[in-house]
Image (cartoon, rainbow, N blue to C red; front, side, top):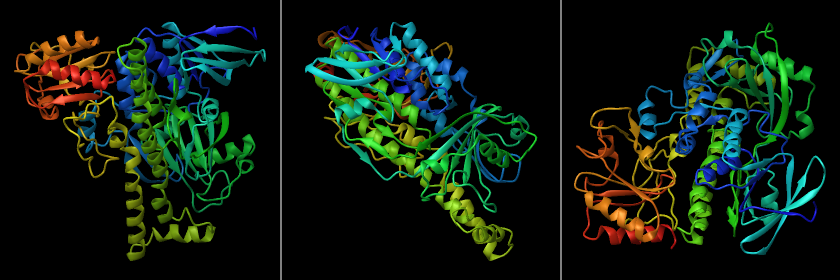
Length: 591
């Protein structure tokens, strides 16, 4: 077996959200390959859980969104994030979260046809790996990637190890994908430099079963900050984020040491009895039975790779961006990395695009990685204001008690404390309503035609919270609900696009664009579907939202890439539509 070489075009290292999603997206193009994973199976702990609209739109493209929604917790379980003394005790504050704020609902409805869902990684990974296997991918768990050689540019020889037998063997592939997480061996082998900022210490996850259904009736939410400043605390258990895993009997207690404390790995280790005692303190109801299922510690990182690809080797997911879970960006970014790469890979492999199209994967996605690791860590830092206001950052117990007592003062002292605490809580809204950081990606690469509009529109002043809806090239196609003249089930503009094809959208007076698209598609050798939206056109803009969001005239057009990002647009009809479309397509496809 040691001398045997297994051959495949595509080898994915890692079967987490990045690797499994990549296999699913590639299989939608009929592409098959091999996935290996050092793990013994899919995730056994929940890890990532917030699945946002951008990721669900990707999964919607291949019909997996419904399974994910059905497997996750409904949005009304995510209605609040809370700050409290214990799960059963006093509550200090709560914020609407994940699109549930009545004042923000319109913003979320306008952004996407999808809603947020709480989908633990234990549920997401089986959905993805099952689809990959059922569409022809071979998946091998307990198999580690060791190293690779590249005897030729299009030949990669990977040495892998069967962890059960201890034997090694080789897999020859045309492409290699490093989706092997925060300790990526592929990244190490490639020697890709990592941009690292100082980490923010350790955290401890305690996964447990405990029926808290009687406590959440009037405390609905999937995240609860629990803290008791008037008490002493163990080094590993200063404060806690209680996270719902499954309503309402499975929970993750994420214990945090004091910010800036010199806490080592050994300081985070305690007995199960000590963990249970602290958990029960934070639950606040001794009658609740607690069963610990898993305990693990993790580093709070702020790390991103300088670039994501090297020749025919591509890295995705946590291999290239590592950060805490604040804003819920982790697995969502992994899925979007995969969605961006999959169509480019298929187009290059089928020779419908030039090889340099693959270079745009890193060009487009690495800046996104920088943004999300920065935001996730800032999301954690944003909590410092309320912590300081209520005395959590004060190491001396008596001083913490004194600060807490000031909240009871009915005069100026208490008023100032209460105002500072309110401001601190509201400051965390960037985490729980970060619509902009989730949806505002602007791609600038050779796979977008900016020749007619070099100046990008300015993002909103609060680009973390606010979504810029625009058809500007390099931004995601705006969502608008459409219907037929005789109404049927409504559908989104994004449902017209995607599915492995380019899409051209126009309106009344734009019939020449549809003719030009058909001819340009034949000339360039790609598929383009074309639709006219408007009065008695292919589809009706029944709410007039497309008219407000398209940013082109009725006889203009918007050309959309297979990943539903805008490739190019024309504000109105032009004299040479076919010639222009051919030029744009060849530029975008790097032909």
